[in-house]
Structure formats: C-alpha cells, structure tokens
Length: 176
Image 1 (cartoon, rainbow, N blue to C red):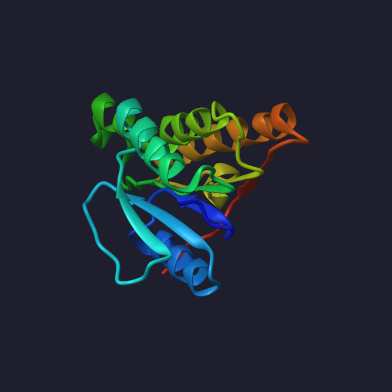
Image 2 (cartoon, one colour; image 1 turned 90 degrees about the horizontal axis):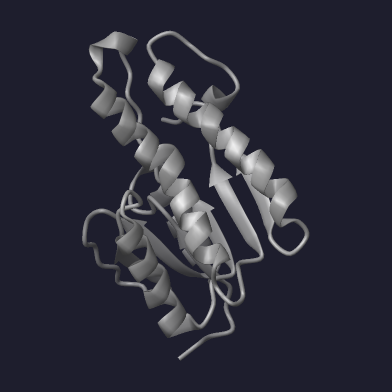
C-alpha cells in the first residue's frame, strides 16, 4: 500500500555516508529504501534495505520496480554508491579502473536512467560526487577521473531535466 511520506531511494545506503544519510532521514520520518550489495535487515518500518548492485542493469531495474510496486512512486533519489582506489595509478589494471567507473559513474547513470523512465519520475536526484571531482591529487587518479566524470554527468543532467526533476551534485570533502 502506498503511503503519503516522502519516498527516498539511497544507493550505497548501508555503509559510511550512506548509513548516516539513511539513518538521519529515517529519523526525520521519511520512508527510506537503502540499497546495498549485501542483504540486510532493519528493525524500523521506514528504513528498508534492498539488495542492489549498481553495476547490474537487471538488479537496478528490479529494485526500482520493487519500490514502485509497494509505494507507487519514488520522490527523491540519492546516488551515493561508490568506491575508492588509492595508490600509484599504474599499480592498478584496466579492469580495476573499469570496475571503479562502473560503480562510481555508470552506476549513477544506470540508476538515474531507471528512475527517469518511470511514468512519474522523481522530483529530485542528488548525486554524491566529491571534491576530487574538481581537484586531482596524487595517488587518487582513478578515483578522481570517476568523480570528474560524475560531475560532468550531473551538470549536464541538471540542464536536461530541469524543471520537472531537479538534478543536484553534492561534493563532500574527505570523510572520517
């Protein structure tokens, strides 16, 4: 049964910044669907964990369909899923870099595309980028490249989707 609360989908919602956002928003009485590659459970009725790997079209489509089946809509999406590779750039393989891009950049595209194809798309998509999407630093080349790409994607979608869906990049700095 659909509810009147704001429905929020948070990718990468089970660790680090995702956990903080999911918990904070659930405490404010929003209905949160927090995704993770792991199967998790919650004691709260308004914090629902969904298994979803942002590198899989099928898993993203299935998770979005599951939310729509239950809630009839998704009001806000927070694209937060991401990984970091640090170290000397050429110590990583091209496959490592492709996997990083698939999570950090293509994963956000994949989720945005899935929700924008809904009959009623979300009114807001927030994309968690990074200060490293503006500033390159040693030993973070692959991560920086993925976040520079994410910044570009988000800036373009901001113009393409406005005014019906607001698309906003948020670039936090280093987090503990």
